Length: 608
Image (tube, rainbow, N blue to C red; front, side, top):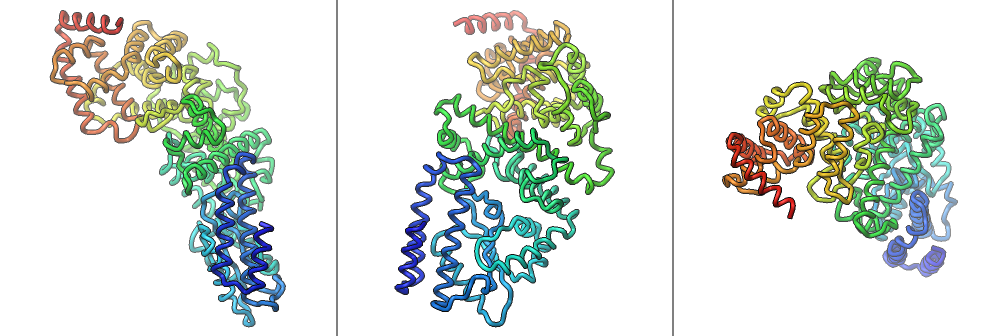
């Protein structure tokens, strides 16, 4: 930059035109961007963003100097005497500017009759545009900042996180006074609107195999929301400076580690994509993981994706807890009545789990206070037999999904339900599943408890309570065997059997569950890939199950499994194929001799 400054100084002395000067800046910027990957490899997550921000700051300051010299020549006034300031907004203002993100700049001025501020501001902007910067800019009189902030919550948010770059410190002081007024005005509405905005973002960008690192669940918006609320309520310059009564050191340390990793991941994503890209697409994962130092194997990429998911969940957990604590005074009192609240402040994990089980007779949301207590509650190193009756009771509840969701949010799902331990955050790179294994499993349970297909809903109603509990356990654990070297169907059978025996499930039900998990992909595979008008196909399929009850259970399991993959997998076409297979299989169940022959052929095939 010093070399460029000297070159620009000489060009100004020689009265070179703006275009030539901008070209020098553009080439310097191009060289800088081409070497960013090397800088990235030697710096941390936030440190890299700060350095990148500083580079852009230096460019802004140089452009200001160029404009000043060109407009005033040898009669340039002192910066403080020129009623204009350049101000960074958004991620640029927070010093979290990512490589290919838009650079949000505000030029703020005070109307003074003796200065033609318009010409000076235009000169700055023209030079910046000629450098090729991806610039998002605003130009405002100090006096209009408040009224502008009232027109759009995005503008108000950007102003709250503004930062001085260059220009008049007098103008900046007045700007800060205006921003202070903006920050303190109608904080309740601002917070309520930001919370609504967050809910909308979470709905649009759920935690999938291709998470949106900026807008999605556990992304930077969630982390920033903590900062924005801390800023308007306590004028905290960063999350760490929010009062300690809200954020413990341990929580902040875990949060910061996760955030630092996500900073690095997003920067690597921009570098690999060569453009602004905040969705971690499957096709970009190999390049991003390699840039972050992961070995270029399937296992290495899985470890990377797993850490991304884990980090996003950490941000979601603590931002949820902290935001509730910060905004408690603004939440309507009725809110507490629709959330499950802990009965005591010092309960053990088992007590809290029992409270969740009791609540699962109806749909519920868990209060963030409960999330915090769940994470901090005293608990054994591993779940032991004192927990088994409570856990078994879960599967008899009509709304198990809400308990599972709560445990997942508290990052205790694998701890509580040990067969799921190795599939928490486990990615699925097959291009078919939309979610990691644990989230897919929860989605399957959600669809099981809310069957939309009338025929399947009627089938489910014919099951007794033990059979419904069995089916719920099978649906939850059907993919628990993934991520091992052995076939996940066989591993899943072993995990299910051990778990069900510990909980005290009846042996005949366990045997049924083993068969369902072993063949849980069979119905969808046969229905969608084989000839349903071939009698041998139907006999072979039916030979695995042999009874109407088992076919009923498998049919419902297949519906839940397919529905939990993505919203469009179980559709009119696939539903028709599955129903045809089910109906044709029922027709051959009484042909025992043919079924036995088919079963013998299957055994021979499996032995080969």
